[in-house]
Image (cartoon, rainbow, N blue to C red; front, top):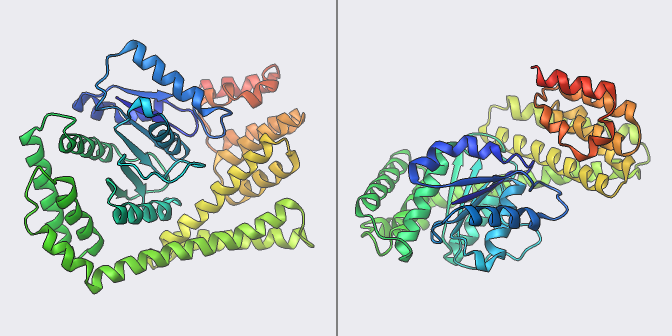
Amino acid sequence: MIYFFDPGGRGRRPIELYRDVAEKYGFVIAGSNNSRNFSSDQSKSVNAIWQDTHVRLALDEHRVYTSGFSGGARVAGAMALGCVQCRIAGVIAHGAGYPSHQPEPTSKMRYFFAIGDQDFNWPEVMMIRREREEKGLPYRVRTFSGPHQWAPAAIIEDAIQWMTLRGMQAGDMVVDANFVDKLFRQAQEQAEEAEKKSDATAQMNAYRSLISDFAGLKDPGEAEKKLTLLKKSAALKAALKGEQEHIAEQSALVNDISSKLQAYISGSAADSSALHNDIMQAMGGLKDQAAHSRNEGTRLVSKRALDDVFVAWMESGQQELQSRHFERAEACFQIMSEVNDDPWPTLMLAETHAAAGNRKLAIKDLRETLKRGLNDASVIESDDKLQVLSSDPEFQRLVEQLKHK
């Protein structure tokens, strides 16, 4: 069993993405339509999906996992770490690290992280990788080419294989020698490929997998000796130093722009117009670097920093909206709508104006949201904050327009 949590409550999305993999390995998968970022009580959604599946199904208690994307990854982690009686066997986290507002996991909980190389949460996952390595906690990190998103199906297959292997290693499952041999050969091939490419980080990951993931199941051969030599090498030290520099650079860029945004949103700036222009120029510079820099590292750092600022201040706007600070929420969403043509900011503007009682502006925002690419009528039909508009003829026309696309 794998329980999936999407930050927007789109439980069907991971089911559609991973159905074939689940069927291949004999898993039931369930996605929550109620758990979403800024839900008032995430525990209700977690309890509901747990109770529903346990009433309907007879589950293998050694093969129950949680998974989620972004904020949903944190919910998945909170469920696994917080529900002792659930005996969750592992967590598959996409695009995020540990749960928010909880102590860092120190248990032997198996943690698989999937992260895009352009994902703004990449630094967080890299730091967690280092911590778990130092503490000897079970983990695997898979990086794929892409932004903040659910991982490709091939990576979920790797996660299921790794969780199964770890279950056999722990004695929770019967050892399948053919399965273990197949994964061991794959790990050896990955190590050989990394050696050929002189990719020190990939070599480290491959060697440690041969040693820790197959302990008690296979002889790691030369992997322990090679890992010891690699850890002393200039190549690995340089790779880890470069990784740390990218982490620090992203943090500096985000902090600089965020301090300006804080002053702008709070209204504490002496000249808000000049500050607005400064923010737009800074984010425009990041956008240009992300698209056109000849240096791959600069492109990736710029892309991550740009998305980091965008998401952080969209979430800040959502928190202001929850607190009914409508002017601050509007300021957050408005400036983010100017730097990013995604439909999310204008949808949030519609929610803000609807909550503030300005139906005319809310309808205008929804029209712009559709222009920006929103094509799912259920998104606005199921939005509680937009229900005050449901009797408006123009709102009904927009819903019908989406349904006939």
